[in-house]
Length: 428
Image (cartoon, rainbow, N blue to C red):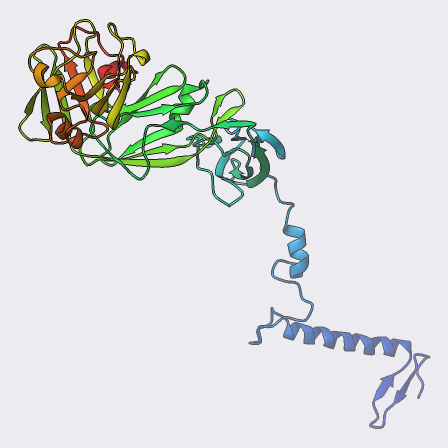
């Protein structure tokens, strides 16, 4: 039976099946609905226990992970801190003192490392406010340095600056010399370290800072300049016996004179021996010797005459000779000239004063002053080691103190030999 023109056919069981385009559309709709139901049943919102998600489903962030990272990673914010290194990168012939400094604007420095060619780090310190850094001492001359400075801004964003420079190579160098012997000698308690510079020193403060003295018992030492070529160093009071003393020379980065730098950086050491202090009373013609804690010994002596009196003041033995050549032409003495050899000589001034053996002192000692300014001890012409002078000489060492008082002469100048003890500490 045909009803209209919709199109259809009877099935074998007597039911009616529609055909044509409308039927095909209905079939497609049924198939699509089944697919949607299947997807919903397997999706994350289903009540099933699988807990999975369909392939290609969005991540928890709403996008696939690689796409999310690219979309959510803003460009790194640059640090507002600006680090400046002086001298500028690549600078040559840099002065070893005062030229190196690291500063920062709009931030604070965290670390600064300055290294030399051997990787040795230069000592330095950050300022308390974190805005600058400077080395603790001068740099070596003729040396290449690398700088790495790190800082952060107010938000903690870091920045790093690197730089390199080379210090100057001096056109001329000079080595300061002193009065210390090699091989850790032993000196008396009055030893004064005396340093001579070959050139007149322009910056005495910088030169003095570059020479430091370290004592094993913590004794503090201060320097005093005599002119611009000589620096003497001593403590306020005599050294204590047994003290180990080391002098540190670090003058190679110091411009001693225009265009002239120091050289010969080194450490020199010595030890303080027993205490021996000899006090001469020129008016009484006597010398009292105080050695460590022993009872004082009194020795009869002859001092300088009224015409050529001995110096008053505190002096120090700085040279010993078994026989000393004494020529009046090398001094300013008055009276008849002389050119002689005297035994057991112990020099105490640059102007020619000695404590020494004197054959004429055999009679004059304890009675009168007959010398040309020296302190004479009884002895023979060639020197008898068992004489008063010989025994005193054998026991004496460089650095022993000799004090002269009650002479009609003048006060010894502190730069005459090692007579710096005659200058009050407040003026030292």
